[in-house]
Image (tube, rainbow, N blue to C red):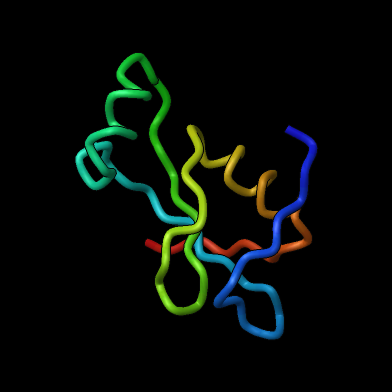
Length: 76
């Protein structure tokens, strides 16, 4: 996908927080879409804690953030 999006709730530095999540934290309809996913899931969150994206793999999370001119940081 080669499309940038505007994300609400970002701070002035465009920080997004990358966090490992389990599929059980996602809505049921999303869980059904990712049944065959083997890589760990990672979510991007804005500064208010809203989840703005879910991707498979930590590296992919950082790539998605940077492709959208955002500054990713890890959350442990």
